[in-house]
Image (cartoon, rainbow, N blue to C red; front, top):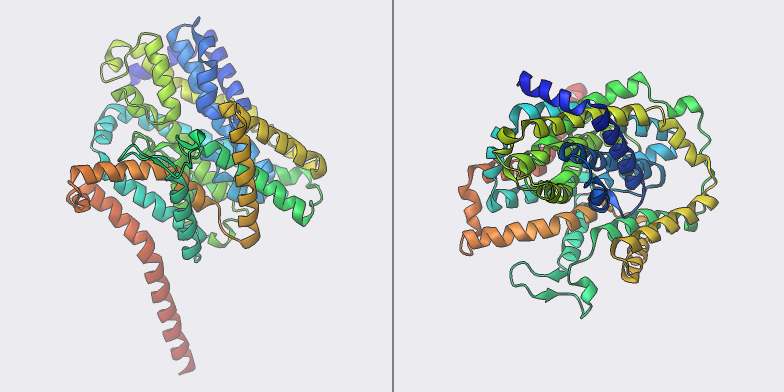
Length: 501
């Protein structure tokens, strides 16, 4: 273990590798700032410029783009409620509210600190447990993934606390929108109305930009733009109290993110949603969630980064991509003549351990770069919103067009922008809708495969100990809060009777 770490640091700390790691995280941050791009597109577009580099240097740079984009997406999520990355959607719930209260700098700072701590934790686990964890991940077949998807939906439905029905309604709406396109079970087109642009389904990026960016702009135009935030500089700097309050959330988020990140296909988005949902359950400050709770930024951002690192467990150890971006990185391995899998750790130890150690270096560079700049980024909120809204709309529409290079994406963004505005007007939550849309294809695929395994009998789920444990957690998350609330109410009534007597 120590020998591997030494080898990794010797490889990653060369001047050339540190320089390209810096280039990667810087480009990744810029890419994350631009709506519609994201880490997957960024890595794919910039892959050709790495062909002249050594394989380890090229992979270090591409990995830097990956986690750099995660933080770039956080900046726009907090400042203008526009997630640059799918995994940053949850950050808008409390990060944007913190910004509106003059605490944008603290939100950006805690996301940088949380991401760095998560990187250290996940890197330590990755180095120590990658091969055995890869074997554990193989135990998660369609049946187990079906149970994981149900747990994810249960957690996001409970986002709204007491508003369980509204959360369930929006999650179902998201699942229904996700059914547009080709059915995985029959390969037939559904709800496309003859439009070839819908054969691949409703694109998530366009929905995300519309709901959050344009929806917020439309709503603010209707209610009248608020005055620019005139917070004092010291209000934008994170305090020791903020860090102390956020630390448990960071540690929980790191664990949840890493646990989900090792599962092929689960990805950072599910990890950030589940981490936020669980944090809302266990936090002492439940009433502040959705209104600017700093834990609501710390937890999903930590989970996001931990999952991004953990995605490399199945990628390196099994040759199975952990998510969309690692699938592109898997292609990069192939281009350089490398075959990810169990033998890679033996045949290319310098490359593997150099790449893993570079995660620590890259996240340290991000922390050094972005922690001092957090209050500076927050100064953007001083710009009058009359100037800011046209910029947000322009970048959103250009970002949507750049995804597929056709006007259909732009119209989709506009349609979902109107929907986002209407949801705000009637007070319906957007987060369950978004996760329903994200989980829809994964849920349906797991459902079809589970049905095939059971020959039409879904009770096959109850034959898997892992699936049973996951479903048990899902049931507990629905039943236990109501049971505990009932017991507390009964205890208070008894106490009142004793006092009266």
